[in-house]
Image (cartoon, rainbow, N blue to C red; front, side, top):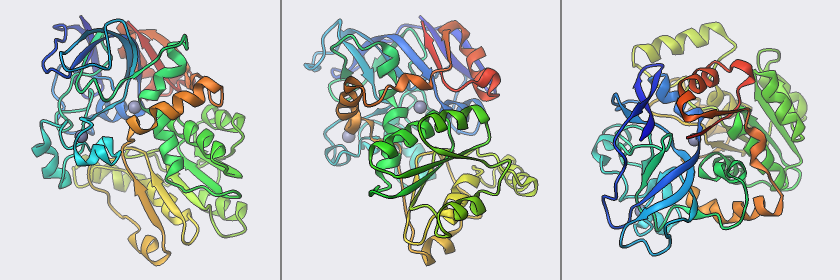
Length: 389
Ligand SMILES: [Zn+2]
Ligand SMILES: [Zn+2]
């Protein structure tokens, strides 16, 4: 089959690779009908996530048709149409039983690698480094889905791929980012990063009853998308975000702040940017956490900072004093996608949200290298790329 493979920094290549097979009794093999390129794929592309190997198949956002099931998968049959969540979860361990699927204790065969960096290991993830299990991803014609009796959700009606594909990651991730804010009527929520996840966080915050949502980014096309969803917008290259948020909230700050940016944030202050770039290049820190620092400083006393942007290792100049002295709550996590599949599919069916609005480019799988380059450099207002084999 054809698959999009990581070949080193800033290089992906569509190559001919062996078809996946059933390896365990709870596996299924899916013929991929749609996959997507994610902002967190760019962290791999940029070479910031350790334990990638040449030839690794990328892609953790995909859906398709079941073509083979293992003997212990009773919930799916050949021909079913499914969306596959990005965290791989067994459904039986203590974490899974508590709904914490992205920290499943049984799905990461390379847990030891992750433990060295993180203390304990998170779940395995499709197409996301050997530290996270080394599972081949879904930017391919076929994919093997472990624990297929737990993760995939069947799409039994005629909803098109584009409306349901993002159940695999970015829609539930944006939703969980808003949910962690414990939104109450009248709340103001600020969202750093108006990419697809930020856009879904904006939409989710309104659905949960936020009165005002402020989106922060530097790309006008992304800010305009957030405005169309009802958000106010701040371009951090034009205004001082902390001042502007203070002015908008009678000096108090937003009730909750969502970091939908993560480890590769840009920074309008050149000295600060240079500082982090140098430390990152020297592997003295792995992240450039400007959005996170700003979200903490901006948040009102006693408020919540919700982190859904991806981080990989350690950060520098973390404003712990602000967090502690001002009674802030920091919440975070890779999305526990399995928890949200049914309720969010229900909202899509009812028409409360149509996630396809984030798609800017549709390409063939063979064009994945061009898709990565366009998305990385935000060429042609690239917001979200969907690949079809
Ligand atoms: Zn993703
Ligand atoms: Zn588990």
